[in-house]
Length: 332
Image 1 (cartoon, rainbow, N blue to C red):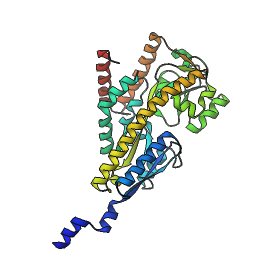
Image 2 (cartoon, rainbow, N blue to C red; image 1 turned 90 degrees about the horizontal axis):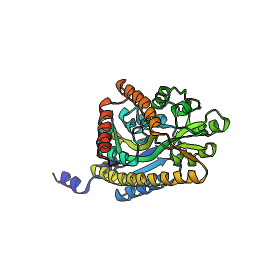
Image 3 (cartoon, rainbow, N blue to C red; image 1 turned 60 degrees about the vertical axis):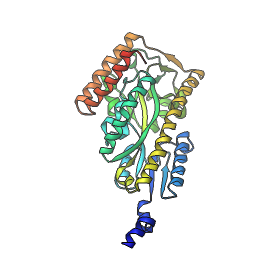
C-alpha cells in the first residue's frame, strides 16, 4: 500500500519515460517560411510546457516526399504526423476535400461561415479514422492564371491546363468542361510553363509568386476557382502514448499556432494579389451569365462525384445548406 502511495505521489522514472515522446512531422513547407517559424515556436512552447517530455521534430521542404509518401511513412511508424493538403487527406478521410471542391465558395465570408460550423465535423471524422487534427491552415483562393484572358468556358477549352498529378477531382471537373488537362507534379509546373507544355494553372497568389509561376502568365481570372488549405494530423495511436496533461498541452499550443497561421495566410494572399497587379498581371472578370455557365457545368460534375462516393453526399449537402442560408440572408 505504501509503495502504491509513493508511486502516485512521485511516479516512477520508467512510467514517466513511457509517457514521453518525440512527434516526427513532415511538411512540404520550406524551412525559413512563416509557416515553419510559427510551427517551430509552437514546438518550443510544447517542449518547455511539458518539461521536455514531448518534443516535436519537423521535416520541412518535402524531404519526406509528397502527401502519399508521408501517409505511408506514418503507417509504418517512420513518422507520427504530417501537414497535408485537403486533397492529400483523401485516403484517410474523403470528406476532407469538400472545402476545395471547385466553385463551392464565392468569398472569404462564406468560407468563415461554413468553417465555423463544419471544421469540428471534419476533425471528428479524422479522429474516427485514427488521426487527431489541430485545425486548418488556409492557403487562400486559387484562381486560373494564364497567357490569354479566360472569361468564358469556350476560351478555356483552347488552353493547355495543368492539374496536380493524381488529383481526380480537378481532372473530372475540367473534363466536364470539355478540357483535357495535363497532369504534372508540382515540381514540373514552372518548366511546363516555360516550354509551353502548359499555359494555364490554378493557384493562389502567394503560391504563384513563391513558385515563380507568375513570371510565365499575364492574366488572372477574377473568380475563386477553389479554396486551398492544409491540416496538421498526427496518428491517434502515437498521440495517445502521451499523458493526458501533455496531450492537452499539445492541443492547446498547436491549435493556437494554426489559428495564427490561418489569419496570417489570408493577409499574405491579399497582399500577394495586389503584388501581382503591380507586376502587370491583368485581372479579367467573367460576366454573370458566363459565371452561371461555369457554375452549372461544375455543379453537375461535383454532384456526380458525390453520388459515386468520392465524398459524402450528405456532408456536401450540409455544406450547401449553410451556404444557402448565408446567401439568402444577404450577409456575404
